[in-house]
Amino acid sequence: MITAVIGSIPTSTTTSNEWRQMCISGSPYTVEWILKALEKNGYALDGRDLVDVAQSNINDGNGFVTQILRVVLNFKDQQRYSIVLKIPDADLISQSFGGEVNAVHVNYFNQEIRFYQSFLPHLSIPLPKIYEMVKWVPGEAAGAILMEDLSDACTIQNVSKGLTLEQLLNIAEHLADLHNSFLKLPEDRRRTFEDDFPPNGGCMDFQVTVVIDRAAEIARKYKAVIGNRLNKFLDILKDPVYHYYTAASVSEAFGLPRVITHGDLWSNNILWMNSDPTKVGAVLDWQGFCVGSLTFDLSRILVLCTSASVRRENTDLVIAQYYRKLENFGFSKSQVMQAYNETVPYQCAHMLFTIQLLESRLSEDELEEMLHRSAAAFDDIQDYEIVYKKK
Image (cartoon, rainbow, N blue to C red; front, side, top):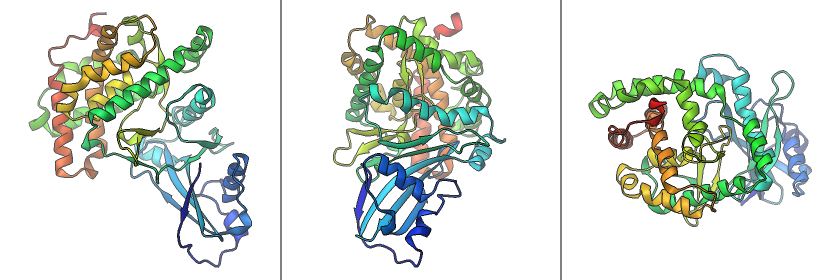
């Protein structure tokens, strides 16, 4: 449902018709467009009763491609309705990638739309309600995703806080449900989805040219904490094929099926229920999804979003919980663990990249926590011999 809020309404001399024609954040999408989208989803909101529209950017400095906007519609009856609009942002893309919009950026935005179009009917994982979607076709159509605003019911947890065991187990159960839903599809349907949604080749190149380079910069900057821990893995981390391997083909290497992979499952993309912060309220931002490795999201959550002590004490327990929730698809927990271990070097490097992105917004204590979390994760794999290197 859309979020309804009771409260005082700002006074304004703007007419309801003027509000309806207002464009959101310079996009071609108007308040009238939002009202029509909501009407199609069963919400009878009379635009003639609009007295104010407020909009705010809730990206909070995150993201590479999209603006995420909260739009609040205020009506005469003292009701406020809040929704979220995601639109691509050329300026943000330029800041993130140092260039103009290209096909990789367009595909990245549209991938989230393809996810919702293809899989919503099949999945039980908590997701926001989607009201309207428009694919991004530069020069023809500005992209848009209009969705439920869950900010009153849910909260994003700061990554430096670290997930609890209860939260990790809840995520593991939801990932198992997600994978069960996919693996229950007829085999020919699954193969079609595998062909249609492989890992994004542009993202593989991005790992090498941006993620790993920035990870190395942070390792050098904080050498007193990170030391030379990254060095052992730099050769494979600069190999685009390794990144495809961690995202997908590690599945075949260890006899595992491919499943739906979120691709960027970390704290900023998970909403926790305010009524019970151990329960996932929604998983957001599916633009990096593919049909790939069933351990990719698990390894991201455990390495990046979990304190060293909680991860070390509970990795086996979390993976065991995930495996127990899976229906019997003919593979062992040890196969899952092997694929997980192969993915960890990349997730360690990605953590350094994330630190670089967040550095200016982290307090001294938060930065120290993230750096020591990274160092500990690297310590735990220094003696691990990656199977990929032997291939």
